[in-house]
Image (cartoon, rainbow, N blue to C red; front, top):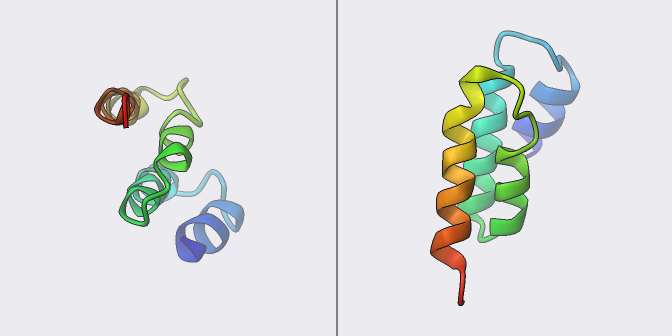
Length: 68
């Protein structure tokens, strides 16, 4: 999480690795059981066309965790 959040996104918010770091930070949250944080991360920048996959993943996570 530190690598994606601080060393990549905070260090270079508009860098060439931004989209990948955002997605992988969401996946890291998922793997650590922080589903709400993962959903928030996937939805953090809905204006970028490349993030449509992240929005779909957020929706899938929400649907798969309802009722748990």
